[in-house]
Image 1 (cartoon, helix red, strand yellow):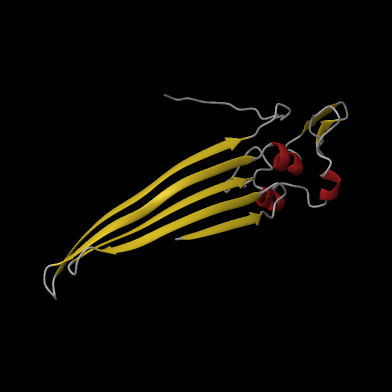
Image 2 (image 1 turned 90 degrees about the horizontal axis):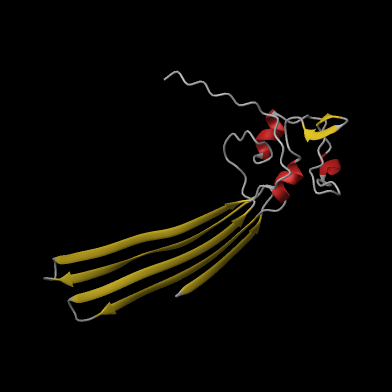
Length: 174
């Protein structure tokens, strides 16, 4: 029997990973010829603030991509740490105009990390049961049952103050 605990703080603000892993294994010799063994694992993981791994039109969800592709190179991120206005709306660096505070293209990355984050978790059970029977000294028969089951949950936070100026058009030729 064993237990492992893993905790990691992410490299992005407001991100972390936690995992519990329980292991049980045993072996039972019922006779000189019959042996039963088992191994059962339970893994529980909870994640917060996982970044997108693909292109994301909303911006901020994949900061590594935005650093290299979209954001201004002279952008001072220390100035963006105050990501929320007193009224709860997003404070951004790329306002549409002096009288329109909505972001021109991309959300403040700190707003995205603290307001538009994802949490996910997984409960997983996997293992096996094996039965060995020795017919003779040189011949054995073996049966094995295997199982891998998991339950996964995801939650995405998206506040009401998120703005978009995207124009979306659908053309259907069918």
